[in-house]
Image (cartoon, rainbow, N blue to C red; front, side):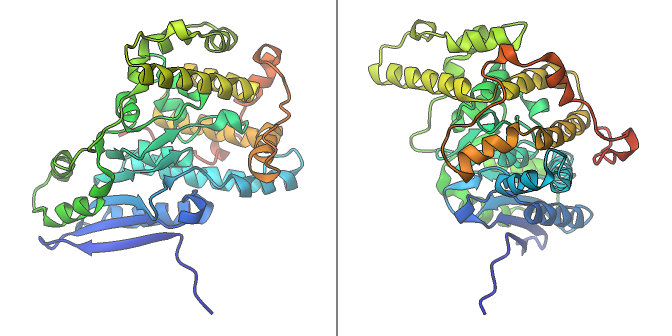
Length: 389
């Protein structure tokens, strides 16, 4: 009987200087490396084991296959757990989010440099892995997004922290519209540090192998290696940067209803004038896609995105993760998330029946309920997360 491949491959690779590189490879390419509970547990356990190892100087987190680094979380398993829980918070979701958020927090404050190779699709849970890394790498094939409005969830895995810290109103716009970003967009938004050619991963590994790791500042050594990798031959242009002023104008509203109305009523004339017909057509397509995603998305999620950006802007990372654990578990009992996954991945009819048709219809107390903790403070699954050091 053939033994199945491990969902995460953990390697310890000895370098020329006698030190060790820790290599973690997400290994579910057919599932676009979607992050499930066993994968998150292996990643967290391995990172914790490597943390105190003096011989390990650097961690590289990459993936099998060229299509995706990580296309999100294992929401199909979450769907089945929600179906079985009959309107209560599924224990599986509590366990999953506790592990995932603990992993993401660990990456953010890891004492050794962590390189995340975010080539291909990087969405949802994949964004959580990327955003915490000390060295965030994207390529010309990268496609990043927080598409949760389409499934009735919200941009979790630290979205409450990184969305409001993007340039201008970029984070709010991305959360509301599920707009996909290319590598240049990711660098502009602060989600990536390096835009390199997709064929450079093996070169990166070789250069890390050749580093003289005797110095004390391993972060600088990794930065130098990444800065000398080849850029894409045809690097993408950032549509986010090009339309930054328009995004700021559309999202400049005191209520989510005002912002949604602004985006849905945005016109071609709001976009920067371009003498290049192809670039102009691309910009119109970009706007239309954003409007379609918002129009078809969950009105409850739109409220959650707006609220998390307001609250998260004033919170520490640990506070954001604790708030998101509450929000995520509440989503697991509300039915909206379950319905969104059903429509997209189970029945695949692409016609979710949201609880409300428009953002104006969502009651204030319904929104606030997603921020109401079901646990006493000392029973919170992330009570162990400390303040930033």
